[in-house]
Structures are given as structure tokens and as C-alpha cells.
Length: 130
Image 1 (cartoon, helix red, strand yellow):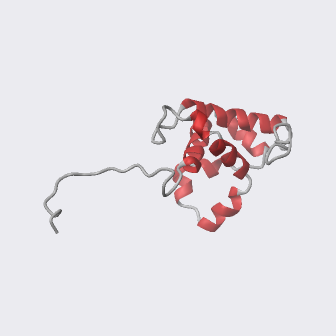
Image 2: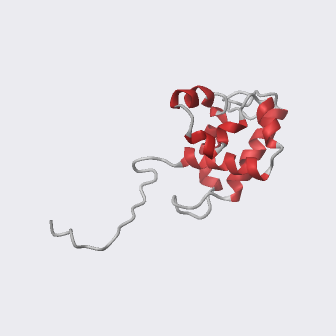
């Protein structure tokens, strides 16, 4: 074809068009929060979440069905972070980088969940909608 000798490279942003990166950004925010605040490991364990599920090296070696089963314990956290991702991203672009706000929000949500006795994992609890 006529494009064989073309040296141009095109990068396309398709976030929100073909796939959303909110979930993966939320997962990364939790990973970073665990590194910044190691005390979150014990909070996660108290909430029935295995902090090792947020270790990048270990995650790549896990069986997909095992990941899906274990994901149920922290699905609420990923959903809340994803829902709030529009206010925690840096800049106005969907391509904006993971911001410090998302990392802090991960910490706050985990601490509040512990204080709320694990009741804020859906539409119920102290922060549930009416």
C-alpha cells in the first residue's frame, strides 16, 4: 500500500470510546496508597481485603479465576474510586495522569469503611444514597 514507507507514528486516545481506564486507574491509586501509607495493609486485612491483590508483580502471576473471586472483597472500593475519578484526575483531559487526589481518596475510603464497620460497601451505610 502507499503507507508502507511512511515513518509517521500516530497515537490515539480512545479512553471512554472503546474502553474506560477508570477501573485500572482506581486499582493503581490503591497500589500507590499502600506504598505511601503502609498502615493501610492492616486496615485492608481488617476489612477482609488481601493487600497482596494490589501488588503489581504478584498480580501478573495469579490465575484469572482466582483474581475474579477475590475481587469481590474490594469491588466496592474500585467502584467508588471509579465513580469519583472525574474529580480526582489531573487536568481536564481524559488522558490526564493519575493524581495525588485519587491516592488520598483511596486511603480515605478505606479508613471510612473501617470506621463505618464495613457497611459502606454498596448503596447502604453512612454514605449510601436515598
